[in-house]
Image (cartoon, rainbow, N blue to C red; front, side, top):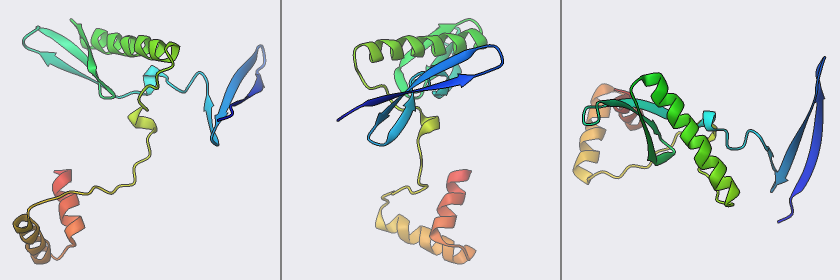
Length: 141
């Protein structure tokens, strides 16, 4: 797999900025933005056990950051993810793609027992909607 690097120079009124772009298999990634910790998905919850807020990252389920305040917990987990991304990049590991950058088709394949399928079809028919609409509405609740 051949990698090609191009340089693009952006001039502003006072500074000149050079950004390296790497092209791999037709995809172009901006080197600084590829694994930006701010693009990952975060959540802060309260831990009754620890009596502190816990910062979590959906793409890195094994990471957490305890802090006394919500803002410290979110800032801590973002910094921790940044450190992990730097280590993964240094060791040539591929970090998970941020959920915010992934493309979703909107299709979900779900297996249910035949009896439940029949019940859902009957419910959809009685409501005058498609099975897809019925299930989508149920998921939205």
